[in-house]
Structures are given as C-alpha cells and as structure tokens.
Length: 385
Image (cartoon, rainbow, N blue to C red; front, side):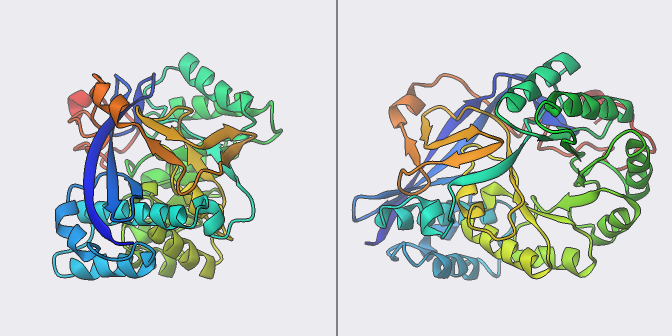
C-alpha cells in the first residue's frame, strides 16, 4: 500500500459555552477544527487532526511511501525541512501526517491504535478541564459538576489574572469534586501570563488556602531557569511542555530540573508523544498529554509506562466526527474501532453553517501585550491587551 494524496477539511466544535484562558475568551464557544485525510492506493484513508497549513511543503516526504513505516517517515519529514525549520505550522503539518499514518497502520492491522501500540487496558485516567476562564462562578460550578457525575476527582482551572478569583474557583472545584475524593487534585493553568517572582508570590498565597497539585505554564514555555526557580520555591509541581515542538526543545527543561509534569500537545502527533514520554521516563518524570478534540493521543498515552493522565475538555465532538470512545469513571474508555476510532461524515461537515476561530485578536491564541509584565493580577481585559 502506498500513500497517494491528501485532502484537507475544516469543521467546527460548538462547545456550548464561552471558552478561553488568561489570554482571551471566545464568547461564542465555536471553534474551527482542521482535518487531514491521507489517501492510499489500497482504499484506506488515514485521519489526522490539527492545523496543517504547511502540508504542501511536507507531503512530498511521504508521497508514494508505505504508511506502515511511520517512525521512519516521521524522521524523513523532519529531514525534508531541516534547513527551513520544523516548528510552528510546519510541525503541525508533520504531526497531522504522523497521526494519519498511525491511523492507517492500525487500520491495516484491523486493530484499534491503543491495542496496536501495546496498551494492556483501554481505560485512560484523566482529569477534568474545560477552558473555563470565561465562565462565571455558577456556570463554573455547574460545568465541573458534570465531570464529578462521571467519576472525576481532579480538575484544572484556568486563571492567572485575578488571584482572589483563582483561589475562590479552586475552592469551588474542590467542593464539587469532593463527592468523589476527600482530597481532589487541583491544578491551575495560567498560560504563561506571570513573571518568575510573581509566580513564586502568588503560589505562596494560594498554598495558604489549599493544596495545589500543580501550576501549569507559569512563565514562558522556553524559560527553563524560571521554571526551575519556581519548582524549587513552590510546594506544588510545575507542569509545562504542551507548546514545545521538537524533542530538542525539552532538553533544557530536563537539564535544569525545571519540570515536574512533562506535558505534550495532542496536536503534535503520536510519534512526538512517544519520544517525549520516553525522554521523560528516562528522567523519572510522568507525562500527560493536553486536551484536544477527539483526544487522539489517548491511544498512545494508554501504552506509556509513565502516563499520569490525559486532559479532557468536553463531552462532545466536532460536527461530522464520530468517535469511538466514552468519558466515564474518571477517565477515557477507548473503543474497538480500528485506528483512532474516528469516522468522518463529510456530508455533515458540508451541511454545517456555523463558523468559528481560535485566532481572534481577542484571544486566546494571541498573547496580550502586558502578559508577564504585571506586578499584581489586574483582571486584564481585551481593552488593555
């Protein structure tokens, strides 16, 4: 079987609530989702998820190749662009192809990807999330109550701009999830909006009120010294890595002992997750993939020896995607459909009339001008970005 071509589709996910973080909120709760369909001469189609704007430049590295040679093709794609750089949009394209290749490889074996990758159990532990920054306290409590009803006892709260609000909402999450555990795990994600000393001060105050499990991305993603300083000063763990691309970008964090929970971005592909998780394992660190629509990296996470848990953000899926998985019992239950377990209904996608975007100037994927420059949390709004 050979790879013969590709097609790109765009659908949307209607979250049914405002979503975002300290960098901005999408009030409509509607976001776009890019889908890559990798075609073969054997009649099978591989599905890859995530933005892949640079696909035309990367695809020649895999054209007419056997899709079963996934890891070799991953390196071939990196080699194909080694002079012009592999990060950003290029890495997204590599990842989407990689995900589709793994989907094809498992489909050729007529197995779900989690089984083909060597996982013993279809259940993947998870923690509740939800991009909850834009919710008021009542909606916030109602959102996490839905996770509690599904057996979850850990949650990640989006914050960083208003310390009193962050503490209040962490306490709300603790109370809501208390039905499942006497000591729920509580995480705070500030999405790189603090400075080093600001992080140390704020964590000291938070820890006077509750037992914080981890702080996520307190400072810029590449600031190994800053993360190391925060990790030494704080009682909680420091989690970071979701926005790093090549494995080489993790090396400074490992060398500086700057990360306690190694995260990987679900949109960066299966092979990337494998390599990062093994590097973390060699440093005696746990790994956790961040959330994404359809939770595709959960298949790989199920087989990782140091997998802590996956971030889960919503109970629904983008329009036109049927996904063989269930959120229950405090985690994700993967199904038996071959490959990633994702079926694409192009008619439903074409019939959709909704539109959405992640890249609005109001965020959350646009960094505010004052991010990391505030002396105290100031409940920053779009007006002073």
